[in-house]
Image (cartoon, rainbow, N blue to C red; front, side):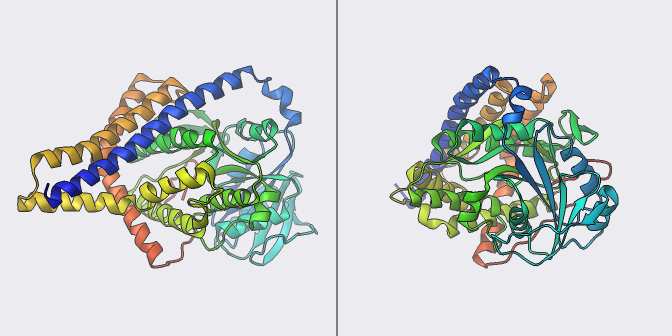
Length: 467
């Protein structure tokens, strides 16, 4: 064999291992979701156990949200939950966010005892709504999303807290559903729900009324990504207690464990994954029983970018945050007490998610060079394209079919056809572009460039999009 044949044999093995693991996670997810739905059907009607659910503090970090924050909070205040408080953390907004909160909720200064269990930027003031006794606003100097969440943790009164993005929409029963793992297993320290894409759907009175596919192809492609990542990626890791990400857009945490772990890391832009990885490391070192779980039916809806510039900036930030999380908690990898999370999940994230874009882009670049110079044999080319593209299509199609077999959010036959076409199209240019953005995220991480709150073009008259 020539060096080219050896190289392409290695690339083909890499992609077979990558998509083979994804396929295995999809199969695990299918059984896990099926079992979850059977158990959910046998549970007591939610309204009967609602008073049993523990009190929770809902933390809403906000930065420059003057146009959307009032509507978002009106939606949260209508959640079907027995006892909860909402703490909005205004992280040094430069627009009229505080003024909008003041006008919308009649805020008054309140001499609340602020307990600084986690160091944060200076707190300017604490306010309480005269209209809603469970709504608080904490005004602080800008420190980033992680710092804002830490300030919210310091102020929270309850043993559990739920972090929610200010631009997200929850279904009315989502909060109670994501809390169920804490009732079923007292060792649960974190639980996350599903994040789905809102584009194209109808919002009335702050809640989702009708689910439709977006008209633009870019968010359609992202729907396929989200299905693969949330419903059948994270659901696959969850039964093994090897889940490394609970989305910052919708996750519940045991406050005591988070404080013991040191709170959110303020010098990273991947604060959600970094905290979960550090909590794994903490509990493994203590040799203490714990559960970090994913629940598929509580849904948080968020709007996806519809332009390439915004989407690219988002994916660059995500990749940089992934690398920061893995690097800060590298001692979890192959830790003698690491369990499946340290010996399987962490190496998988490192090999396929962290450095995967380097391997993929290098493979495409080398293929193009060898084709132009006439050095690439047809069998090697076909094997590479089959492993890198065809297997990717099959895994994406599998995710769509599993969605259709379980939750069926999009019920029109035409919607399923569109999603299947999207699953095919995703691997023909979009995934390669995504790998390029992620490669740029790796470069940002190597240069130690500091991340910041992302900004996104708002679409008038719609639910605010996620940055």
